[in-house]
Amino acid sequence: MRYLITFMLLMTTLLQAEIIIEPISQELLAKKVPLIDIRTEGEWKETGIIKGAIPITFFNEQGQYDLEKFLAELNAKVDTKKEFALICRSGSRSNMVGKYLSDKLGYKVIDIQGGMLDARQRNVPVVPYEGQ
Image 1 (cartoon, rainbow, N blue to C red):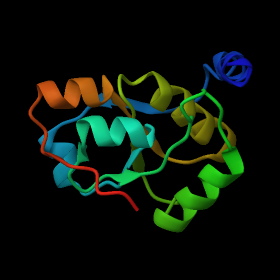
Image 2 (image 1 turned 90 degrees about the horizontal axis):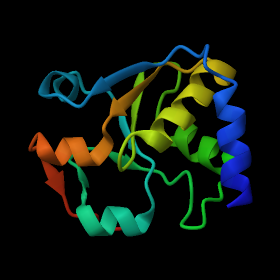
Image 3 (image 1 turned 90 degrees about the vertical axis):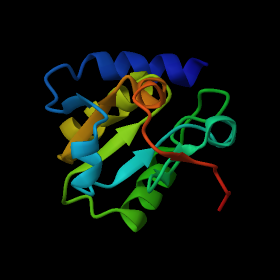
């Protein structure tokens, strides 16, 4: 929990970060922008993932994170020189992570507003998480 609080305090100083915040839409999905689901494996198993999403956990169940590991996996699976989107359960974690990636690393990030909660209300296609 201490790590989460420290990370959140750091993120509040990054208000000037440029990040696109938008709800999930068929138009966004049709653009084939890579969608990174940063929730935990337990969350993926519970609700499934959006069809085509790439699951890469950022915060674990204890609220801890390993930035280097996350970035290594992200860079291995996505061309971070191009635009990509982040999604979490409600939009809070993806917003924090997106602001960091945008402000500190210059990545072009779309934060999916409302996260999976909103996506499910919009009937976005979800598939079961099969593990890696």
